[in-house]
Amino acid sequence: MNRGNFLFPRRKTAVNSAAKKNSSRATEDRLSQLPDEMLLKILSFLDVRFVVQTCFLLSKRWRNIWASLPVLNLDDSSSEDLVSFENFVHSFMSARDSSSNIYKLRLECENELEDHEFVDSIIDYVTDTPSISTTIQVLTISVESVVTNLPELSVCHSLSVLNLSYIATETTNFDIPSLKKLILRDCRFECGMGDSLDLFEECVNLQYLYFHSCVYYGDVKSFIISAPQLIQLDISGFRVDEMFDEDCEIELVTPMLKYFKYDDSNLYSFSSDIDLNFVEKIDMDVRWETSYTRHGVYEEDEEDTDPLYRLIELFEILGQAKFISFSTEIIQVLSRFPEILEDQSSPFTRMQTFELINGTTSGIPSVVQAYLFGETS
Image (tube, rainbow, N blue to C red; front, side, top):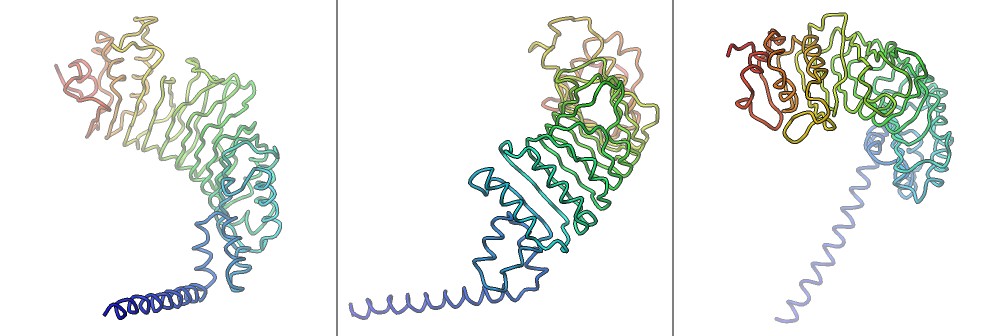
């Protein structure tokens, strides 16, 4: 009995091992039998270095498939150091099949590059290679580096999404008519001494614009957002010369705008010479962190009405909104000058829903309720 119990598990283990081996072999065979298009789609989710290594480890069927990747994920975290990462990228670009199309390219580095022209060389490769410049749809560059060749992207007529993070550039105009989505994070722009700046006037098809913690160096007094097809505008941490400049005005030339989001510790002045009749949603969180005590009163000047009038002017511009979300600090500003607010008619004539961030509407003073909701006290 004991001998039988001992032999049975061993025989079962041997059978299981053989079964697993056959199953693995069958899985590999089934995977290799997939068409190249399907294999490339699977590999497009992986980092390029890993793809190359994997292809050389597998059968001959996989040996050269990496050269035709339609999506390139270039991430320095897969390399031992930046030098080896830069060398690998250059080698990969020179060895890939230049006739194969690339639809997406993502370049991401956590550390500052050794080669300061590295990013520009990647842009050159994209714009100088017809199989890429005519097909690329999404380009992501997340690198702490000075970039000078951004204007060359204007030749990429298929480029619809551009995502830039941590770059510094002297580019003052995104001349990319095909662009539909532009995301700018922690970027630095040298704008010169012109009083006005319109970065997006050539982006005639732009629908979504997001810029977070971007700094514009220069004597900019009028920051123009001119985009005839813009639907969503998301502003967070906008600065001129790294400081809040109350003399700088943001002018909206966005007739199709539907969603406006603003998140910052100060509020810029907004203006518009056109009617924004399509605005549906406003989401605003303004904290005025440097000006308020915990009781919601200005420390420096209790009679400063500038924040109030900036809010009133912006609300007049966006008065067609149906869905509105405000921070409690906005309510505090509106509450500080009831005598001014009483003379103002409610701008939101189409409001359907209202949300107070981190608060309840029951605590809103009656004069503010009358202003926001058109209610009589």
